[in-house]
Length: 304
Ligand code: DON
Image 1 (spheres, rainbow, N blue to C red):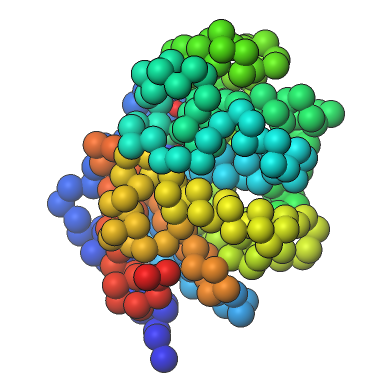
Image 2: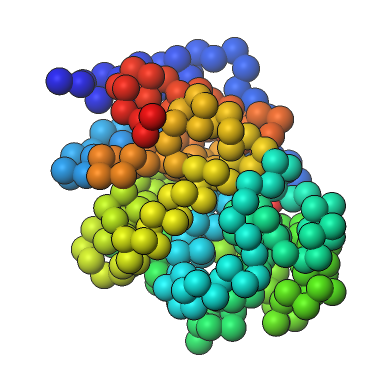
């Protein structure tokens, strides 16, 4: 029998002692204040057990991890029509790269790079009555936790400094791949990215993707096929130009955020989340990736 608690505590100990913890994102000023010494890891198994070590109950900015939840909501609203406006191919480039978007005539490579997520935000804006409120309630229902909130200071901070996102949205608009005004779409997108959650909440939220689309209390569901597709996109595109590296080292579908969070899952088995704010050069949590590599190596629990 695997002693999950001991494995997580060992991973946390190694992370605490790591000489190089990466660098905290500073392009969103509000994220620059977060200490690199935070480290949390939480595991939730499909048979209902959970294990945690370190700061797994401390909220942090989930940033791009929210793109998975936005995609899931958009899929439940307009289904396959999403793929008329973006592709499902890895980009092999950073999350905020613009060149490919122009070369490919405003069709983002996938829903997890920023341009793709901005198109998803446009879809939500067009299809939800009260977009910010409805999306927050969707995440709360998925997690069965009504305490989840946006962080307004983080959203406002990115609104003032998210120049590349303004550039991406304007490019999308010029190619007629945004229906709503640029500022409205970005206002929603920045709000979505400012969601704050703990590792423990994240393992709950994402359990629907490990459970064929059915969330914990069955308040929200996707079809089994939709869940399969989201997991496939996480595996191939969840870490931008490091998606290959994550599959190679960890072997699970997952998604990172510049707040230093990572969530990953093994279908029918578990969800796992890590938080370590220091990033590597590709914008993914440095110690989070090492922690997940250690976890799947020690437990031999991965898709490969
Ligand atoms: O749009 C941005 O740049 C941020 N709100 C989210 C980027 C992000 O989290 C990339 N992930 N590693």
